[in-house]
Image (cartoon, rainbow, N blue to C red; front, side, top):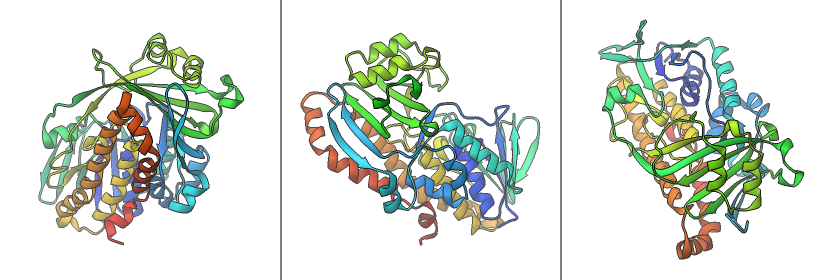
Length: 396
């Protein structure tokens, strides 16, 4: 319904994708980003076919291909020997199987694509330096306060991340649980590596109490590394907290030469670390004309590479539900959206949580895990990748 004016708190990947999905279905959208400019912290991101389906259907294929790296496979290897436990073919096979590609990208490049598409869309208005501080839900819409202004709309979507203000307004403060894991991230220029290390795969190395992931971004210009270590005594939940390069080297001492070479080749000033916290699924995503999306309602640990994908799927389903709604039926449409998305989001959260344990097993448990990994890895990824958000929303 084109008369809808949907208000979105948060201008990250989830918020902008949702805005584009809503606008594609004829709705008007306003996005409120608290930062002074639209940007994305972090480094690499994996975009699997379940979310590139949404992005391509929004007409972003050509723009994405200008930045994306297409991996040939995902691999699982043993931390010290390098033995390959499993390999899932991507590339043309993924395209043939799911009809949409698997991309590796820098998060900033994905944001560039989304921002430019939103700026070019006459149905979308972008506001920066605007934090949604409160809202009033009334019979015919919502009234949102950003501190400096009051804006009226027909619905409010909280896509404002893991520290969501809208979530607090709807559900109160929760108590996230520290998982006992600390994640590192770093970028390594490929020119600093020997040619034999330019492997066109996403590789995860499993080891006792820790794991290491690396894959190419910026069309192979950089190697993005994310490494997770079980440790206590440090619980800062921020993507932009600097870490000591010497500590990272010590964390992976004795690991395979490829892992250690990547760490050594990184710029020490670009090492960051953050504590991983877990939050249980919300019993209720929204109330009346307000709801939540992405990390604001189902933050997902990075052990299945599906955090951004879940937000992108959310946006597609939400837009399909709202397209069918008139002004009076928006609350029902938002409830339908949550009913459709909550089971899948909870499953992905659960599997990501389980992977945090599986990746770090030791002894006989690790030996048993390695025996079944080839079958289970393929089966799990297929179930994740085949999901069609639009079909889920429309029943087609």
